[in-house]
Length: 78
Image (cartoon, rainbow, N blue to C red):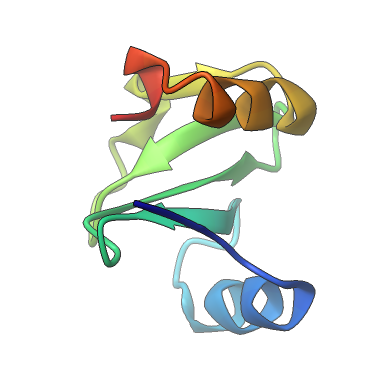
């Protein structure tokens, strides 16, 4: 149910976002929410469309750990 973006899509999603502090690299269930890197602290969060309240939805401390969370089907990613 997760779609991990290729580099071209990461760039496209970032360019289209109004929040330039968030770099999405994955989405869940046809974009119900995105998972991405918060540039200011380099941690990974979930972000729902049009929401700037994502900093309470931490997935992992870094990209590698977020991939492990996805592979392990952790509750943090939903």
